[in-house]
Image 1 (spheres, one colour):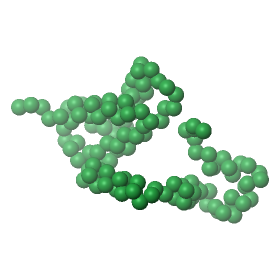
Image 2 (cartoon, helix red, strand yellow; image 1 turned 90 degrees about the vertical axis):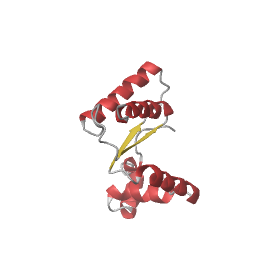
Image 3 (cartoon, rainbow, N blue to C red; image 1 turned 120 degrees about the horizontal axis):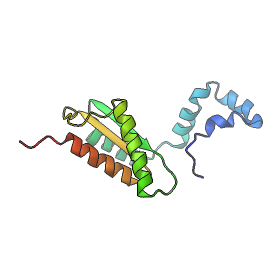
Image 4 (cartoon, helix red, strand yellow; image 1 turned 135 degrees about the vertical axis):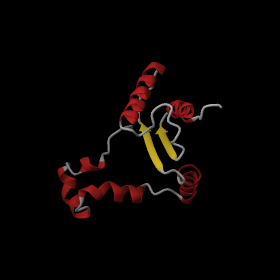
Amino acid sequence: MKTDSYLVPGLFLVPSLRGELERMFPEKDAVFHHLSRYLLHPANAVWHAITAYHRDHLAGAGHLVGIQIRVYHEETPPVSQVVLDQVLSCARRENLLPAAGNTSSSDQAVLVTSLSSWYYEKIRDELDLLYTPPLE
């Protein structure tokens, strides 16, 4: 199954499950946290890779930005470009990314997650151009 929705809150709407779920999780907001912590806790090797990546690429940054792009259908490049333009436009409008020509963002790290590496590569290329100091 592919979905971009979190299904756990919807289980509370199933009458046969509601009573038991309310007893197990009196605070509905905590359901996803507890279940994902129990069911999705990474193995030691995975956790090591995550912490090593964080230490090597993110820990020294004063400002962290995470961009997640979730598009499930196969895309043609023009559609992908539209999604990318929307993401970058929104990130800039909300001041998550610096304006062009601002090279004072050396303490900023941007983590891009997507089902397609194309988005990461395009954002990386855009930010490399943006953060490259001018030649003197």
